[in-house]
Image (cartoon, rainbow, N blue to C red):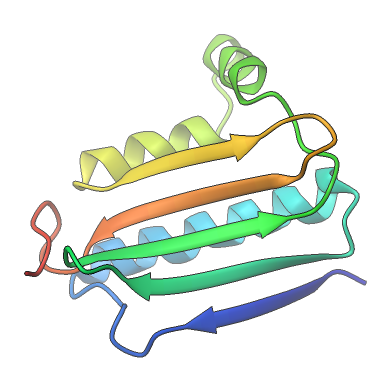
Length: 123
């Protein structure tokens, strides 16, 4: 069994429906990756509204971790979906993605999205 703990601010959801859908799909993909590859029994998801007017979602686990550069190189060569696709789609809509991971140190992925219409954060 893989457990997920979720903590979300009620005012952190983006206005743009397309961005909400993209974030939902992205978090789902990240959780599936964690369940399949991390070796961890649980993951944590948090969603907050930043002071600058962005939605910030953090998906993290305490699993085996990986080398982000090696995974990115592999996905570029085989056309895989995963992290590279999530990053491209978020950037296209005005957001971003950061990956913090290393072998044996777990994984932390940060998704950033404008709260307003795609490409424009709410102030």
